[in-house]
Amino acid sequence: MTTVAAYAAPAAKAPLERTTIERRAVGENDVLIEIKFAGICHSDIHMATAGWGEAIFPMVPGHEIAGVVTEVGSAVTKFQVGDHAGVGCMVDSCRECEYCKAGKEQYCVKGNVQTYGAVGKDGEVTYGGYSTHIVVDQDFALRIPDGLSLDVAAPLLCAGITTYSPLKHWNAGPGKKVAVLGMGGLGHMGVKLAHALGAEVTVLSQSLRKKDDGLKLGADHYYATSDPETFEKLRGSFDLILSTVSAPLDFAAYLSLLKTDGALVNVGAPEEPVSLNLFALLGGRKTLAGSMIGGIRETQEMLDFCAAHGIGAEIELIAASEINEAYERVLKSDVRYRFVIDAATI
Image 1 (cartoon, rainbow, N blue to C red):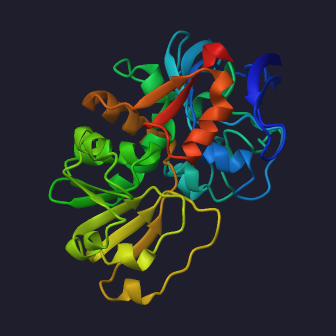
Image 2: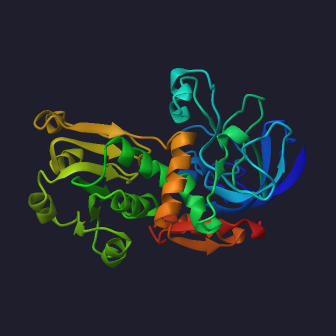
Image 3: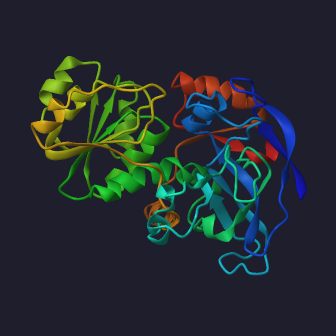
């Protein structure tokens, strides 16, 4: 066991504070990663406030982790000391079910082990990336390609894969019209990735405040959803709408923007239930779907894709002492577009 510094929420809705946590000794299949950067995901706020239900405290959030391997176990073949490595939203799964065997560990029948706020197979609570070091099984660590700076790579481990996976699954590419709903931490990555995949990209945002940014990041069009004319003008336009919004939507209105056989895919998760009139689906054989991160294999594919296309997150680097302020700003949509903690300040 090793004692390391971390920032933790001692209780639901309590401010995060500096503390120490124990990391397990490096086992034969483990790597020890010295964390350099950790992204702040909106999920961290949902979790730290117990907004999605009961949670385990004290909680060390953080599942967008980028760093350097400083120790490897005796059976490790995937990494060497000095390699750049990342950890995303999960650190284990059953490894035996059909989904794990297919490289879709995020849909593990028994439930994957989340990077923080979960209980691992060893019975210990998992602690996330708002810390100086993490020990993880090599099978759940990712190689960060040399072409990606660690600071802009960190958010790819959640925001990147959360948008890449559904874009790939629903065949975003040349000849497809894709709308990204919401222009925040997830949304800006969705724009970059859909553009790089070759789709015609439209941003649907509450206002035109971020229009210049959206067009610069690869959007072809940008519309304000607060303008009723938007829904008239774009009716029946899209093959795919990727919703990154974690607030309840008027689903009927957004489903009306799909072509026949189009899909509205949710990667944002509101804390409260939503309602839907099923007639909004029936008319055009439309799909309302969800998607959750990606498997380890696909996450590596995404990182390699981003390196090949020069894609990283747009970040604002902060010190660990600014985490609580950053949470407040995320809730006000006052970040362009992802806060990243410099772990050297923890």
